[in-house]
Amino acid sequence: GISHRSPLAGCPPREARRERACRHSTAVRASAGGDVRQGLLKVDVSPLCELKYVRMLSELCCESFYGVQKPWEKMNPIGTVQRGLIFQEIEQDLSMRIQRYRKAGNDADRSCGALLVGVDDEGTLVGFVDLSLTLYDKQAEEFSVVQGPGLAVPSEDFERRPYIANLAVSPAFRRRGVADQLMAYAHRMAATLPGASSNIWLEVNESNKAAVQLYQKMGYTVVSVDEDAKEVVKGPLTYHFASTRRLRLSMPLPLQKEEVAD
Image 1 (tube, rainbow, N blue to C red):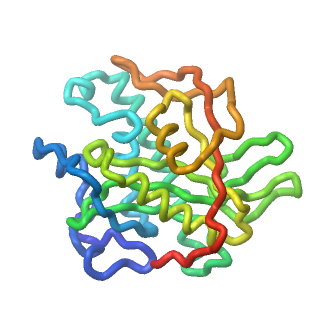
Image 2 (cartoon, rainbow, N blue to C red):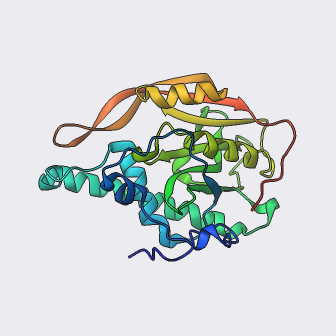
C-alpha cells in the first residue's frame, strides 16, 4: 500500500509540509460528512516524482471524472470490472509520464514537463494536473497524447507543444480555486520548457461544460473541433462509449519566462 507517512515529495521534496501525512482527500474529508467548500483554499503546488503515489493519483482521477463509486455500484460485477480497467489504464499512463519526467531530473534543458500536485496545509492531496511537451502532427493537425511526453520528433512534420492533460480536482474540494492554482503554476512552468511554443494547448469534450467554462475564463479560446470524437460515459449500470465533440483550445503563454520555484 501507499505509505501515508512519507513526504508527497516534489524534486527535491519540500521539508515541512511534504513530511506530513498525504491522505486521500475524498476518503478523509468526504467520509467525515462535512462540507469543505468554504471559500478559496490555498494549495501548495509542486512536481511529483515518486511512483509510489500513482495509485492515489489514479483513484483521485477516477473519482474526478466518474464520481465516487457507491457501495451498491460495487455490487455490479460488469460496472466494477469496467471501472477497474479504466483505473488500470489511468495508472499505466501516469506511471509512464512520471518516469519520463524523472529522467530529466533538475536539468531544465531536458525537461519535457511535470505532473503537478496540489496539497492543502494538512498535507491532503486535493488535485493534480499534467503538463507535457506532447507530439503534434502538423500535417494531420492532431496531438498524439498516447505517446506521452518527450523531446524527440520523428520528422520535420512533427513538433512538440506544451499540452495540459488530466486536470483532476477531488470532488470534495471543488469550487475553491484549486484548479486555478494548478493551472497558473502549469502556465508559468510551460513558459520555461525547452523549445516551447508561444502557446499552450489542451483538449476537452464539449459535454464537460464546467471544464469548458473554466478554461475559457482563464483565457483559452477554441481553435478547432473534432466532430467525431468518443468519450467513456458512466451509465446507470455500466460504462460505455458515446459520441462527443472534442474542443481544442489554446492560449498564449506568459511573454516573460518566469522561474518556477522547486
